[in-house]
Length: 238
Figure 1: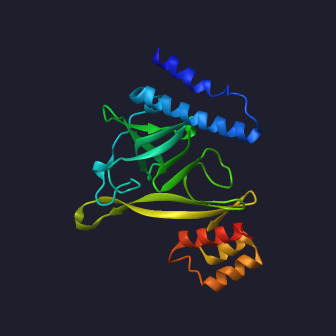
Figure 2 (figure 1 turned 60 degrees about the vertical axis):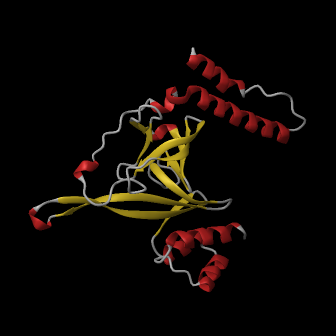
Figure 3 (figure 1 turned 45 degrees about the vertical axis):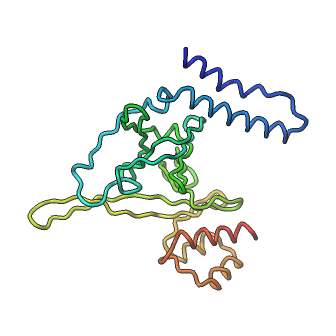
């Protein structure tokens, strides 16, 4: 019965009252949808479909040093997730960067579940937002990408990864993870991998952007993310 009532809540937002304008109607629809989604999440609670995934198998006992998780700890933090077009707020989450899997913790029994990427639009680990690329689109491989900047004319994405390294010293093999991030500029339907200033200039191919970069004396090796955000914001204002 609970699932039937919840389904009714989800569909009820599709029948709004008459509005005086298209803009007013869209605003009412959005606000009504948010209210319904909040009611749905509160009503379903621990029985929400979000918690129906596969159980996560913790393999970190085989690793020494740094961990494969986003925050480098086993701690789960509260964040928001758009799952099957439903917004869930305040969900306990962690991100296994090595396996590129979003993990959530059940609020009652504390079991850890994997959320299938195909069902996720985005999730927030404040203040970072991650978008799920489902197919080989925008020149990017499927996976979770940090949304560094998302503007009118271009966007910047960061693909985080953790590589497993081995230490064979002291007659024993020790495994640990090394973090890295590859950044991409997406513009005019094409993505550009950015590792050098030359890559950045090729991504925008704009004389004003070129002058802006030169005048600011940017150095992508020191702070890649800050440089990319600044250039993308400037390009948006041209």
